[in-house]
Length: 155
Image 1 (tube, rainbow, N blue to C red):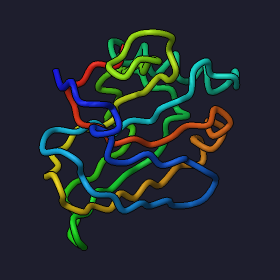
Image 2 (image 1 turned 30 degrees about the vertical axis):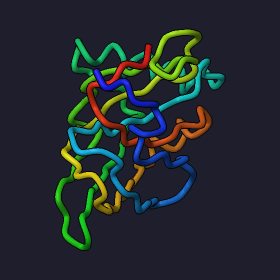
Image 3 (image 1 turned 90 degrees about the horizontal axis):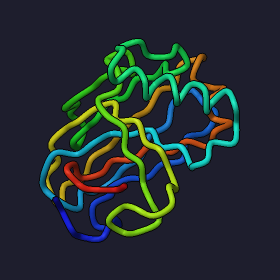
């Protein structure tokens, strides 16, 4: 388990907003496998987003992802595409972030892991996020897209 402060493990936090495409340039803070997550602040105030997130959490074992999770993403290093995916591949895991730096305490966010990839420390990447029409109502739940070093404890 990585015991470094969470701020040293998170390479990207991007607020998701209405639009056809969002992108962000970021620099990896550490070498290693990273999770690509859609995080929702906890508690999730919007009932439709809350229901969809509960369904996505259940999909880890049922493999039935709620249709609201319609999006694609592409990771670039310089101008070369190095990985891409869609939400239809499913949720790999759930990460609950707490009030304490290494996890625990009162839950502050629930994150759904949709992809994993290797990043090299100090290297600049560009992440492109393309939401589908069905994803738009989930924006009422104020989600962010996060890239964080994997294998860390949050709750």
